[in-house]
Amino acid sequence: MENIIKAMKTFDLVSVIDNPDVKIIDVRPVEAYNGWTLHNEYRGGHIKGAKSLPAKWLQYIDWIEVVHHKKLKPEHTIIIYAYTEQEAIAVAQRFVRSGFNSISVYNHFVDEWSVNSNYPMQELQRYRQLVSADWLNKLISGENPPQYDNTKYVLVHAHYRNRDAYLSGHIPGAIDMDTLAIEAPETWNRRSVEELKSTLEQHGITSDTTVLLYGKFMFPDNADEFPGSAAGDIGAIRCAFVMMYAGVKDVRILNGGFRSWTDEGFSVSNTDEPKIAVSEFGAIIPVHPEYAVDTPEAKDIIASKLAELVCVRSWPEYIGEVSGYNYIEKKGRIPGAVFADCGSDAYHMENYRNIDHTTREYHEIAQNWIKNGITPDKHLAFYCGTGWRGSEAWFNAWLMGWPNVSVYDGGWFEWSNDPENAYEIGIPERMESFIE
Image (cartoon, rainbow, N blue to C red; front, side, top):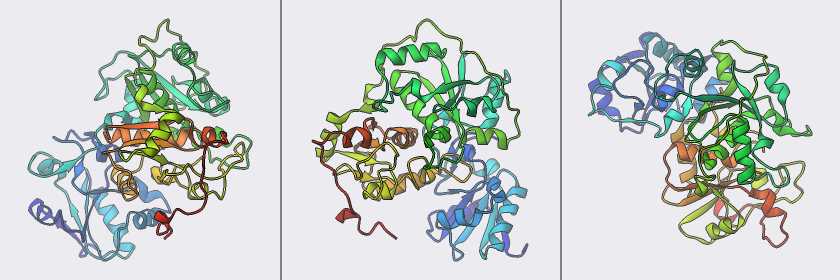
């Protein structure tokens, strides 16, 4: 096996970086791939064109399925780099055992590649808003983690009508927030300006507060009365969207949610933390009205050649086989909406998440969108059934720095409740080749 795995020099890597038959694999943590400098490297981010496949994922039985999902094939030349040679070799050996025969490791990312600005690198534009469990642990332990210059923060465990998810174990110091505090069950849209102001103040949040959000993934089941109660990971990003719309300047997501915290072995609390209210939010809500569009604007977007209404639902929902929800009867899609496949159903986001529930490699998300005409030069309004999945897709676009992105808050729920609104079912002609 050692004879198959070769060591690569920087000059040789430069010479093959644009070769489509060569696949560069970054096995560092996803935070490092996105832009965090975890080993004090001169530049953050990843080697241009590299795929993210953290060494941590070797522990998962589905590792080879992830490799296939990333379109890595045995005939490719694989180049692996890490922070340590040991990690690079461990992943290389797994590739060899899986039938890959052209494997090299590159051990000079920190000392040669990152220090030379002539060697191309890429990073997620707003990587700071996705934090690791280690970063969060430093913050709540009283340290001053990198890329943080505030003096006040609030840590929020988000859930939907499921305080048991919080009380059964949460990150120390976290308060809980029910998504019902920020969206109204009559419409599932964001609450009124007055209600949002009151909610944020009651939870101790001002426009200048750094808010850290996370949720628990608890294996949602559509047969349950309230499946969303087990999808706190998506609910956390829904809360993030509403807070950013309102005007909270620094909203961050714990990448991977509660699972990333327990994966690191950090302590868990069962204390019901009190919410310490503030007297004034400190800004006129909404500071960012452009982040949300409602039905009249959604209709304008459909009619525009410079915009797209983006459906972040499952394929069965999109073609009208199912409504996706136990409280929505009508099946179908909004005419003209383009497809941005969420995954299996209304309470999962497999196509936007990694195997450990961290946010998926952003290049892959962008590529999946672009092939369907979802491009950064357009005004994009993401929607789903009631706003959660649309908010997560929106957040990904915002993280990438796409300049004109919104959530169509009403989504299929509001659209389908109006008999005057047209709808479609079946496979659109333009997408007959979608099914592989």
